[in-house]
Length: 418
Image 1 (cartoon, one colour):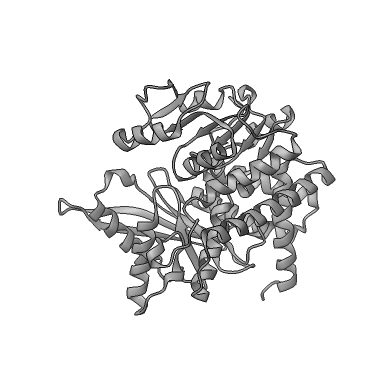
Image 2 (cartoon, rainbow, N blue to C red):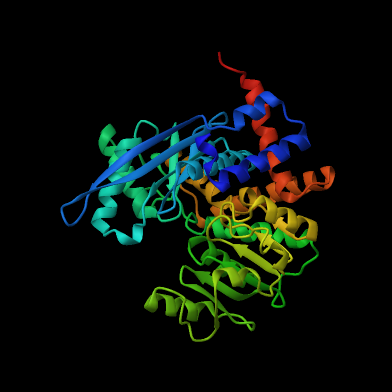
């Protein structure tokens, strides 16, 4: 099938089937979860700055909407495919269910390298893409959010384009917006902060004291990795390595994140930072550390390197950074892996908060947002850990069981149509 072209989709299906066998899931439920509800493929013609028209491929996939409106990011990346988007939509379904949110799973994207576009080209592409997927989205149908290659500005363009089409302002059509157009305080740091919240709880069950003796490696120093680094450093841990598209930097004595920021502001990339040794993104995964946060792209931890990873706890800040084969090796070695649908769920949780605040026209303080996020992330981790202990399965399988169980119950209650 067309869905199963990417390794990420195949990996997601294997995880789903494994969880289904553990919980003896009704096969009629399982077969419905195997494929998305619907998918839209669109052409996105854009007038480039040189006057030529270039056409990009765009996608929006709804996996399941039993629990409520679809929720999921839009990514701009040169490797985006329909299969990848479908896999990410599936993971969003399980993530929203796991976090007890009244939302379904969706994802979207355009196959493009956004760094090659001017600001004008980026805006024109975003607005045209929005008009093409407009029948799919809406505050009561499908609420997009930022992902790789997109940000609050892109969400603002989507909101404005949608609002122009319907004739009035609709801030609830997207989340991850800037504050001045209805965004939520705490949203930008939410995913990285949520990663650290799950690490705090995982450290408790692993009898690990999070202090200056604990070293942390972070692959991917973007929005998620950067926010996670700042939060876990504030707790007292030592950040020894980070990376971006140019490669990684490593200092066994710890990196000074303020100095790193100053360097990045001037040079844009980490390569060449003088106070650390250069490592590749692949080498970073295998460095000595207590905690590893893969927060870049999918498929980074595989059967080729899983046995070389030295971390005791891995918190998946990215979606799908570990393949099934790599995950099995880590599980056999006793590495505590906090899976993506749990570790990086902070973003969708605070996106939900933003959506609710927008519908109510009543906004919360950043402290209120962070406290509510902590409550949900902490409760979800311990719910998953309990299932893991009770059923003697990995944290990843337990997280899927928790999410699928709530989803299956709702599907049975609503019934099958027609």
